[in-house]
Image (cartoon, rainbow, N blue to C red; front, side):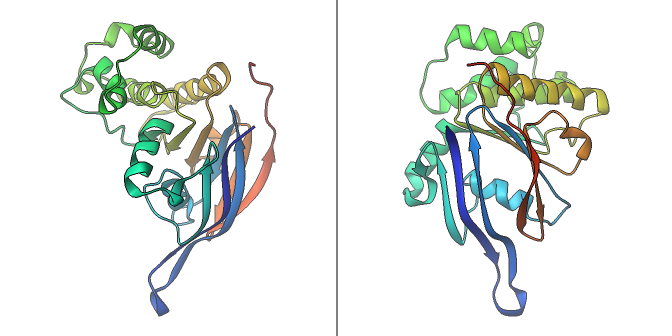
Length: 231
């Protein structure tokens, strides 16, 4: 089952001699529970791709469908609501709210949507992430690895159709990077979570289902396979 479909996606900045084609006719799909990675050097277009898929930037042409819904056929208001409910984000810089503790940061997307958190779901995520003993700690009292675990929990809490991970280990040491990758792999398998990660680190892609590469705005498939997931 395809959760996401990208069709002939283009993104152009500037005009005339200043024109830059950041994305050139990009097309691919992601299946439910698939963990895919996009690699590429700085300036290759991979961040632009992630921003368009996350509805943080509007493409110049093409379509992006998530669970059959065309992102850019929606009004801006509906797109904002859809993004909040269906797309989870994990950023390199964590973007936690410093005044909120671990549990509050995790449930924050639900509170934005005026939804009551499921206590059992919160406990499950805290347990899986190894944060139960840190639930009342503020971000400033956590290590970088622990902060990224909180960010992963925040992305998981809404059960989104898609999680977008933007260089999720970029600010972490080797051990914490490995831990984060194990957590993302677990989320893909145990929770059937569809994940698209961008990275410039080739050491991070050994555990993903599929690897793609962006070079000068052109996407190519480097292979891989979809692992057998829990049904």
